[in-house]
Length: 319
Ligand code: SF4
Image (cartoon, rainbow, N blue to C red):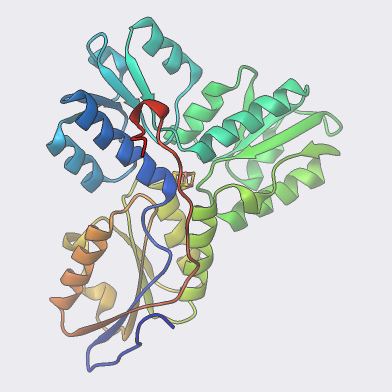
């Protein structure tokens, strides 16, 4: 076991592994930082590069400007698409405006786009399992030229106007609960006789690993704190998984949000972090816990992650 499980008259804090940044988030942040180094300030980023205020503020301080619309960006400016991906219309708009684009879309999100295009090219009707309004879902739907049917819950299948024997395929948002997705896929198989789709355990290694780990953690702790932003899909799923396991679980953006009544009569607290939450914020939450009394921290063993994604060619420093 990595780390020592120590007890005090205070609380035991179990840090979960893996937690926090995934390879897609590291790559997206690196793209902004390398672009700033190479091209100087400002560089423009469409949408939050990843869903975390601390990351966004720190990049702002280095000279990045965050916008929601390309119309806010001057011609020729360096423009970075966020890790969540963008619709074709955004790509085309950027080209029409003469922007210098660097694409920080996570390669695993791009893989979903390509899966969707592949299924449509086979003549299949396409279902996307995901959450309406999320940037990744909007990007994925906008990457596919044919209509995409969005399914958020099993109940949504009832209103799908697709014949049972039609050729159908599904793709999924990368950060969904693996269990929920599996249940929806099972319902799709009951509904459609000619259905194909990717293996749900092969959508995103980081989502899968963090969800598996929090499920295990929930067996050992009295409460779970998930460090992450309110608009972070993968962080919300981590909190839901702990809650479904019967453990009080809270999504916490940083230490300032920690509430005394969450941890009052609790001996063992588990901490994990969403894929877009920096480790410095986890440390901030631990400091906040210490304000309520002594805390002994230990790290649980967990799956090693060695995934790395390459930077766009123009930002690579050749050795
Ligand atoms: S959670 Fe998965 S899909 Fe999303 S950015 Fe990280 S590696 Fe990519």
